[in-house]
Image 1: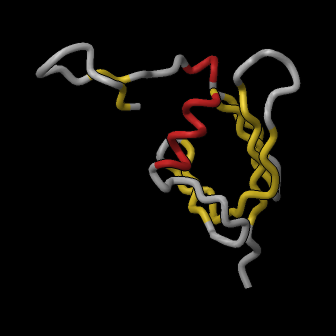
Image 2 (image 1 turned 180 degrees about the vertical axis):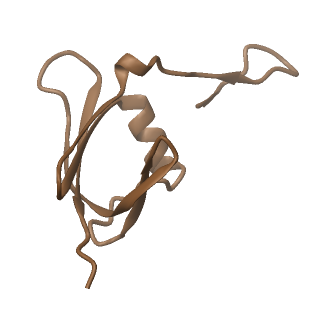
Amino acid sequence: MLLQPYGNNTISYLQYPKHRIGYVIDENTIVIKLPSMLSLELFRTGVLTPDRNEQIKISISGKSIGKYVIDDFRYPKDHSDIITIKFKRIKNL
C-alpha cells in the first residue's frame, strides 16, 4: 500500500506479513481475514466493491478459483484490526 512519503523524492509502501492474512475455502464460500488498512485499500482502489451484486474474480496463488460476490463483512469483536470478508460463489448456468 502506498503511504505518505517520509521526505521529498521518496516512495513509501506498507507490506503485511503472511501470518496476518488468512483464508478458508469450501465448495461455495471463501472467508478472508485481512488487516483493516489492507481491506480499506482494496475498496479504495476498486479491487473490492460494496455492491453485493458485483461479481469479483478471485485468484489464489495465481490460480483463478471462480467468480464471487461479497456475502458478509465483519469488523473485529476484539481490539485487533482484522476484518473478516465472506464471499459466496456465483453458480454457473
